[in-house]
Length: 85
Image (cartoon, rainbow, N blue to C red; front, side, top):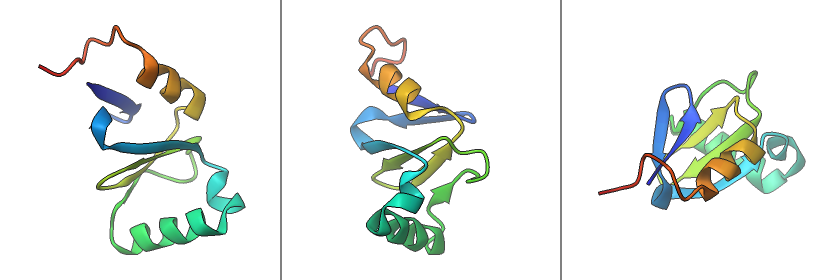
């Protein structure tokens, strides 16, 4: 199954490590350091200015304008049209 996280991005659900509120980038020293490291490696996608949530995957960190609550609801839906074959 895939998760649509906004901006034409769809990520495979098994690759999603976590979905977090954007404010965690400022509230957690460890998460901020991870963000800076992934930024320096070119593995951050999206614009922090518009971000409401952060999706961490095996490959990238996505900043998305969709709320973490909405993304979690999407991830939990069982009737998704994007079921893997």
